[in-house]
Length: 272
Image (tube, rainbow, N blue to C red; front, top):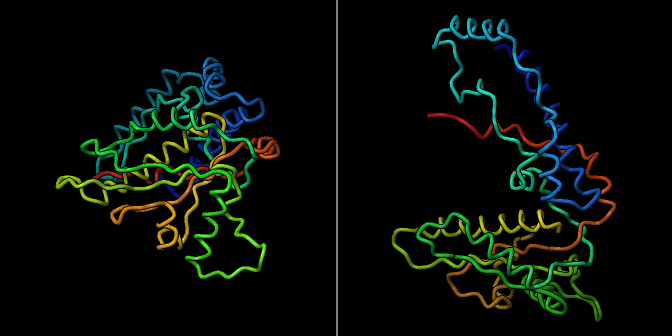
C-alpha cells in the first residue's frame, strides 16, 4: 500500500472513530453512564455499512491471492473486521471516554462509595495475589497538612497566613501507595506495576460512576516530609494522589466538541 493510500485509509478510520466518540461523549450531557451505553448499543452502529456484494468479495479474494507473502507488510493482520463495539460495552465505554479533569466541582463520592469502588478494582492483575497497594483518604484540614508537608519538602517559606493551595484543588484526594510484599517470585517493579494498575482502574471506575479524576504527583512526592505525613514504611512508594470531584457543567457542555484525538492504536501493536 502506498503512503498516500495508507494516509487516506487512516483519515477514513479517524472519521468513523469521531462519530463513535461523539456518541459516547454525549452521555455527559444527560448524566447517564452504563444504562445509556446499553440503550445506545441497541441502536445501529454508525460504523455499520451494507454487506459486501459477492463481486466485491470475489475481487478482494483475488487481490489477496495475487499478492505474494513476501510483499505483505510485516505486522498484525487487520483484514478481518473487528467485532468489538466500544459504544455498547460499558467497560470499553468508560475506557474510551476517560479524561483527566483538572478543575473539579465540590461534590465527592462518600467513603462508602469509595469502599465499593476499591472493592471492585481489587480484581487488578496481581501476580501471587499479594495486593501490594493501598489508598489513603485525604479530606478537609488534612489537605492543608499535605500542603505544609509539600512546603517543607520544597523548603518553601510563606508569609503569615499564606498556605499551599495545590492540595485544595479538590475536596477529596486519595493517596495511592505501592506497598510491596516479600516474595521471591514477584520482583518489586512488578508489584509497583500492580499498584499503578489498581490506581488506573479506580480512575476508570470513578469515571464510569460519574466522577472526575486527576492523577497528580511531582518531584516532592517521596520526600521525607511527605512520606512522614502518609506514615509510609521504608519499602513503600507514594505514587501520587487522585484528585476527585464532580465534573463541572461547563466541561460537560464542552466535551462533545472536544477535538482531542485518540492515538493511532497501530503504533502500540507489532508481531514477533
